Length: 177
Image (cartoon, rainbow, N blue to C red; front, side, top):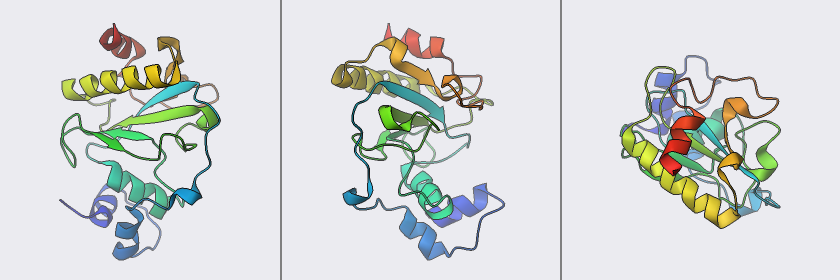
């Protein structure tokens, strides 16, 4: 597997001056004292990575090393078989911590990112199965309903195509029914 630094440098043309060692180290999670605890969870926001490849470790390195965030923005990343197994659910930020995935909605939402660019291809069937299982668990754990599941593009105040036009709320709800 390529290092975090190799992945970032091969997927992004403009990055600040940062050493490979610093980028690779940014792939490690910070201490728990860095996070702010979420008071309550009232929604789940679904994203795509908008990259053909990826995994939680490289997204963490990107978010920490390039964006300067305390950690990866998402609580979960679901692999597509490139840098993690197809359908593998990887942990990002602790689920109790405020995320950095949906501007204006981070304080009460859990962010799930599926690896892939869903403007180009649809999520894999294993990704959708894992997403459905994870959503069911989170909905049960936090007493949420289907109406509490949002696509990033549908969150108020967000101007984005995320998670692409090949992943819809209907796709997600069909899996839950």
